[in-house]
Image (cartoon, rainbow over all chains, first blue to last red):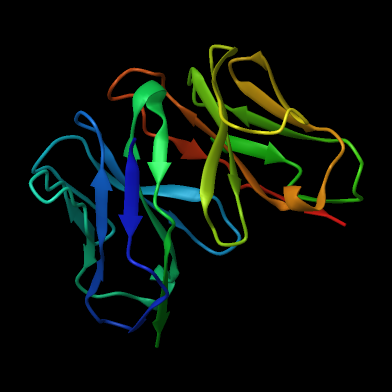
Length: 111
Length: 115
């Protein structure tokens, strides 16, 4: 079946540091890949997505590239802000528009 | 103008009670979902409906019964609440079931605490 593995958190960074959150997946077929973000006390928000191999999704300074050869979709940002502190979820699409989520990675950014 | 809304936001109740959570989406989507998020933030799908028809019913106790009166609404009724039901429940919707329609939009969540 489909599965998503994310790096364990929390990831603790200082403001303006470079961020990478690793995500690898196992899937049949050619799923779409997503990153969602959950700010404290809120629901999940779509951050970015990629629908086919070599696509790059980007939004708000975050980027992730769909790498079929390494089955990865790592999230990166060049310079994090305190306001980026949240839980980040990697997900892939399956049949019937289902999403399989990773366990989430908490990011804590200090001033 | 909220896209996916849920009520109530917080729900505190006693073991054994019955409670309902409501969800509405104004995106014109055909497909809606219920997820449970545990204390470790793990998200697990419970149900999905497409045009009022049940599509996915994961291994969920039959104390949980979803109802979709129309494609814009998906409610969740829980009978005989147990301590282990304490969690955050999220509703979500997507355009449909076809490839390219799977991006899901989430509600703000309902924080259920069973005492």
